[in-house]
Length: 134
Image 1 (cartoon, one colour):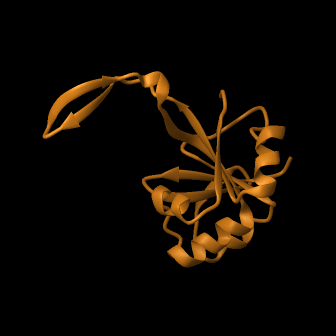
Image 2 (tube, one colour):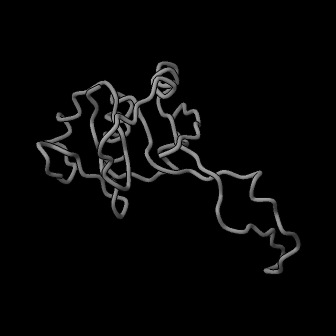
């Protein structure tokens, strides 16, 4: 399956074009030709990350975010003091890759001036979470 690959580094996105990465700008925004895009902090090689579960979720949602188990100990703080040790099995964190409908991504970039801030991106989208193994 064809998709747009965007690499996120220091809150800046680069788009993969012919085996090289170009800093995303207004001129190369037209390179987002595929229906779906993938945003990641690392290059994904090998198998296609768009599983049937991801594609099904993308039909009704603008964004599908990958979540994973929390690996660090979690503590509840009050007035800078630990008041409880939390069971990390009950928590998940946002991970990469993030899957998105390209038309939503283009609109987001136009509104944000090509700046990518994850919290703003998710706050303004209709998203679902999925836990994938990579």
